[in-house]
Structures are given as structure tokens and as C-alpha cells.
Image (tube, rainbow, N blue to C red; front, side, top):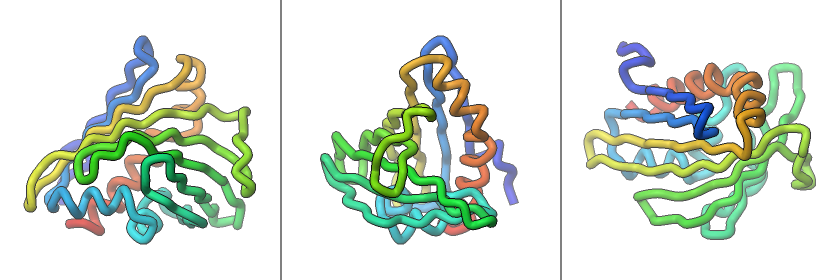
Length: 164
């Protein structure tokens, strides 16, 4: 099995307050798109093991929202919301992601982030490029300290196993 370095790159750009993640998959672009945009697929991989992603509601549409939580092995729920915009079906979308409570009240103690996801490829190979931007370098640093890099790489490895 190929190493994670062979299918993912992660570039931390502190001066620009951005993290750029680029991933390649040996699967069709439409399957990769579905993995990022449907609740059924996201619940299979979005949370890094041993956590589990539970999506309470999802409306993947311009102005739509996903409310979900990451369930820890100890039963703790870490709630998040994702607000979708500028969707170009099969090509790209924007999402603003933030920690919240079960009533969708944003938790201002944690940074929010804006994702621009761009999909490319064909029916055999695909790629997603994610540009994650932050309001400040401090927000970016806090986000990384929460374990984003390690956790997201674990989740993407899970996705790779599902798709390939």
C-alpha cells in the first residue's frame, strides 16, 4: 500500500493564514465528489478513528448547512456546523466550518475556517485541492494545535481505503 505522502500534501502558509491540502485518489471524480458532499459517505470517513462522525442534518445546497458531531470513544460529542456556498456541481464549493453546540450556537472559543474545495480528474483518477483560510495566524495556530493535520490525514487515509 502506498504511503500517505504519496497521495496527500499539506502546506501550512502562516503568512497567508492558510493551509493548502492536495489529495490524489485512484477513483473517479464523481465518487470523490460524493464522498465530500453526501451525509452517507461522510459519516464513513470524516472523523479520524477511533472517533465517529454523526451527521444530524445535511442540506448540500447554496445556503445549506450540515450539523454534525464527532463522537469520541468516551461518548463525548464535539459539535460542528458547515455552511455551504458557491457550489458548482462536480467542480467546487465553499464551506465555512465552525465548532458549535447541539443547537447550532457557534462556540467562539474555537476558530472557524473557510474551505474552498476544488475537484478535478476523470472516471479513473481524481484530485481534491482544499484551501483552508483563517481570520488570523493565531486562529490557524490554534486549529493546528487541536490536531488537524494528524486527524485529517487519518480521515483521508480512511477515505482512500473506502474509495480504492
